[in-house]
Length: 364
Image (cartoon, rainbow, N blue to C red; front, side, top):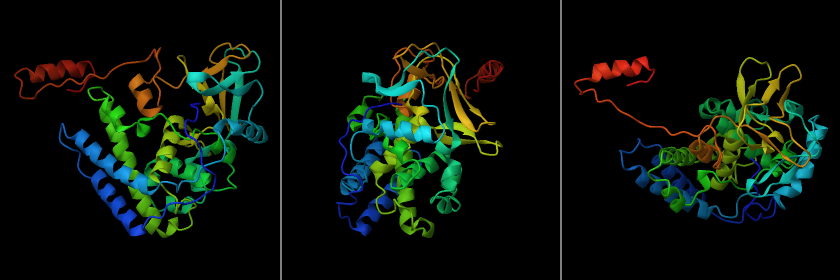
């Protein structure tokens, strides 16, 4: 989660430098939405559909060049502000710092010895960006009237993140400035890089991820230009595909489930500072303390001073890590592949085979 920034940043708040005719852009957006909303292509046609969607997206990206609002300076220049903000909010900041670990990117480094199972990090709710905080923000009015946002917490978080990024007085600005300026998720792959995945189990999910993201972007672009509840959103006039891709990737690589404020259900959240930890094999060592209303993390193992502090992201395969987190973990103890097997109903022994599979808990 501590990926280093690869892209030079432009001046913060520089605003739109490109002039695009609204009608021309809306026509492209409508075409993209229509293409992404069409029925699933027949077998063997998925790549063709992907290239058509991508061509439309690239047209849109070209016309939007220079519109995004980007922060001054490099990402690492904002880590001290992140730690200071965390301390002011009541988070733990003793015993670790943010450091550069080369090919692993940025992560947390122990500044003292930490014992296994020792509580070393806690993050209070006031620091978290959640679906609930989105509902209480400037985005709340639109959220209350849009079923897509209500049904998809990850989309709500992405839009929440973008709105706060465009707000100079945002409570979460120290966190947002510390995030990577781009990612290694498949949404950032070049077309020839995606093509290298042909023949792997990951390709279908990668193509679907791109199509879904493009459809969501087109839908919300139109919504922001036409819905009265979106008229005062800070990103209304600077909502680019690159912005949405960044926000979706930020959420996708960092989202976690926590209890809602009343504890009645779970909701999605971004957890500042904690999400600087990189992954290793092990067990989940993070939980939510309802009594103290904070996210807590205990050490996975003993850490010596200056060692990197790791956490365990979960039992994902490497294909899932590439698709959702943007990295490949060489020593993944939970790596696996999906094998699709079919039993034809026209087979003479179908009933017998189906029964054997059912006993093993495998659907025919």
